[in-house]
Structures are given as structure tokens and as C-alpha cells.
Image (cartoon, rainbow, N blue to C red):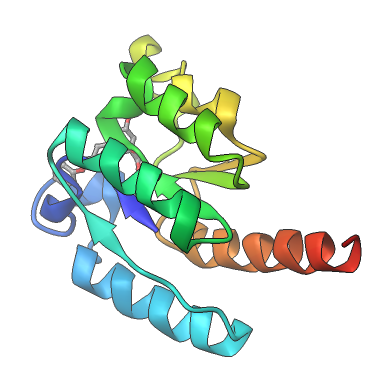
Length: 145
Ligand code: CA2
């Protein structure tokens, strides 16, 4: 589960948009949800585009899927899109806010082209929903192997 720039500020500013949960709270919510789903997760955040891309590349060898909130890089980074496309892993994109109700520059996400699905506007609950959806995708893949 990868988180992009400024998400380390969650819960500290703009609660009217992003709610009051901190990133540590979100990680705890995800650990508990993953535990119930019998999934192993690695939850990370970075403010550095290249680091996010290196982590995506790492996932090729280590993960069955990627849940990503690319934050501001959603709207700017072809490089992140290319890295996600190159993994051949199922990708679920999460946004806490509804990017389509916000400024026009947030309406386009490059990352969405690599995503099986996008969850946005449901607050931090979107992360648990993404974990549920990822479990279904992985189980479905296993059934068809
Ligand atoms: O809604 C989301 O999850 C976003 O990915 C959050 C990004 C924003 O650029 C996207 O358009 C939508 C921003 C993350 C920064 O979060 C902050 C939280 C609290 C205080 C300041 C920033």
C-alpha cells in the first residue's frame, strides 16, 4: 500500500477535505482489515517521486497487487504511470477526497490508466474497501490458474 506526497500531513490540516485520521491511524485501520482478510501488507508513504517509482518496481518481485494513493502525482506523473504499467500487477487507486468534485486539475489521474479500479470520495474507508477488492482480485486470479 503506497502513499504519495503530503499524505504524512493527514489529520493535521484541511480536516474538512481529508478528515481527522492521521496516516498512522490509516495504517492501523489497514493492518486490522488485512489481518481479517488474511493478507500481508506493507504500508509506506513518501514525498519523493523517484522513491515511489522504485517501490512500485520492487513490487514486481514482492507483491500480488498494489493499492496506491498517488496524491498529487496522480495528476502529474507519467513516470509513475509507466512504472505501474510495467509491473503487470493489479492496481487499485485510492483517493480520500472525491477528486471529481474538486478543482479541474484534479479530475484527471494518469495513474487511473493502470488501475483495475478507483475508489474516491469515501474518506479513509476507501483503503479498507480497496483491501477487500484486492483480496477478491487475488483469489479470482488463483482460481483461474
Ligand atoms: O484525496 C486524496 O486522497 C488525494 O490523493 C490527496 C492529495 C491530492 O493532491 C489529490 O488530488 C487527492 C493530497 C494529499 C495531501 O494531503 C494533505 C492532508 C492534510 C493536509 C495537507 C495535505
